[in-house]
Length: 171
Image (cartoon, rainbow, N blue to C red; front, side, top):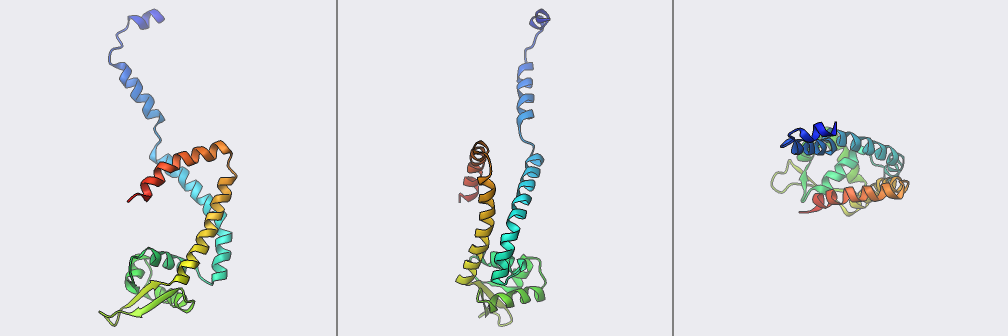
């Protein structure tokens, strides 16, 4: 059998074999997406009890937390109408959520100088403190998960995530 392989002309077949081998080892985007979904679902479920406790202490809902996150991401004041559109909420629902946040001292609301019918919103320092508390609860769950990994898995995860996170956070 070895003699027959030696007698065959294999010119040009080696690159195809290498390509097939490389393609077999390249991660399929759907497979990676599915794995990330399983991991994030697990982390969210792990963080949920503590995040719910913190939200209860702060007396804010998940919807109001979304509002705080959106205001935190905004570079400047944002109109109530724009925020409602951004979060796919009705104006009345957004107005109720914001009312509660204003009453808690987490969000400032003022009349627009340019259009007196428009209300502008901004996150107050206490709103940032509230977001940090909720984020700390989520981060504690992630830290507990990672701490439970074997050293080799934790190191491999760090090595895989580091270049991705660097690209995400680079300007």
